[in-house]
Image (cartoon, rainbow, N blue to C red; front, side, top):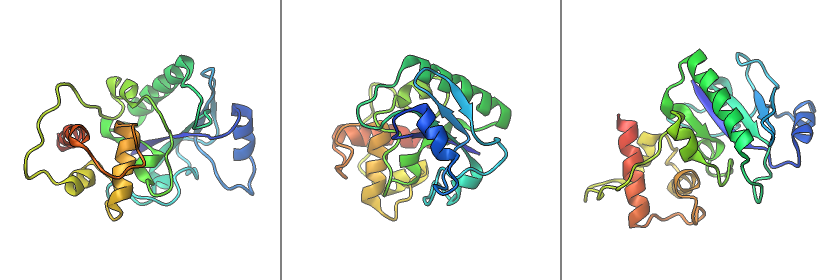
Length: 203
């Protein structure tokens, strides 16, 4: 039903593959994509991988069982996102979307699902994916937010777990704002972005 994207926070593709082969570590994903665009499949699409952990997206609290996990070789702090890597990701996403009829809104990041503990993939070019039909983005000019607009309801409709509203706001900002994502407030411009994305999920 979903695809969840991560960054590895490790030094190389080979290191990540070795980590996923280590049973003591107990983590895995279906695919790993290197900086050069090399794709390594670690788990059959139909098998459960251990990449999501605890979290919630919409009404689903077990995305290990309902999502395909893709790890991107990136240290999570200073690494760029090479064109070859993103192009390989887009091709893989197209294959998965077509094969399993995955809805456009169901391509998410780890930080969307588990914002209390994850920020991956950080600094990620989500708009590039949304332009290809994987996830949503907003268009300019942004509309004025209605006076009765409820941030908590909007985040919940998008899919965020709003039991911890501060964490949900930070998760949203990691995905759509990427400036001051650790600040759990939304200025006027950021509210307009939230309203635009909220309307996408309303259809």
